[in-house]
Length: 145
Image (tube, rainbow, N blue to C red; front, side, top):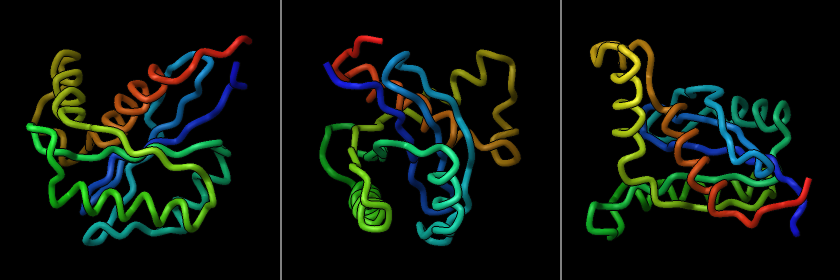
């Protein structure tokens, strides 16, 4: 059985990147930040601070595939982002299908009574990162506590 791991997930976007953390013992994740990006390039110091604070064992990046499962222009950019994460922080990086994670995050907020017009002021990217991380965590081998 594998030892419990802490994971950090990124919902990659060209204007902002949602970040969440979770761990394999409970398969739960929580949103932690929405980072600003300029044409898909984050402030790498912000990511370094989050990695230093949360000390993840592995990183997960959402891969925005087309609905038919084929790669999109954004999936290529997300893969490049994942390679840069690996190169900078020397941590394992896993790309996972994130189709509909932002839609699911928005639906979850609507269900809790939050107005769709508030997404600009309160982005859902970190919630989307938490949802995709929980998907990844659920697919990992179970540990013994």
